[in-house]
Image 1 (tube, rainbow, N blue to C red):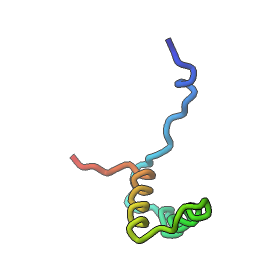
Image 2 (image 1 turned 120 degrees about the vertical axis):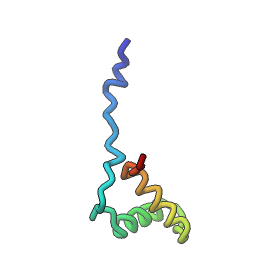
Image 3 (image 1 turned 180 degrees about the vertical axis):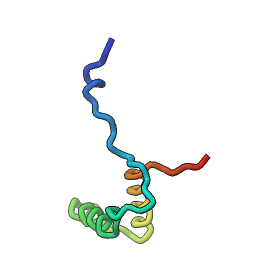
Length: 68
């Protein structure tokens, strides 16, 4: 039996193929995201928080480039 809800679910847009360089992934983008978190009541990020968020964001946006 086919599930109509499953058929209506779009495929994922992320992660994207990882480019050698992407001019969209900038400190400006990252700073915008950290500011939005603060505007929504989250605490200011520490240096360690910033590093971890940058890694998590990169892993969300881009597919890993695993070598075999």
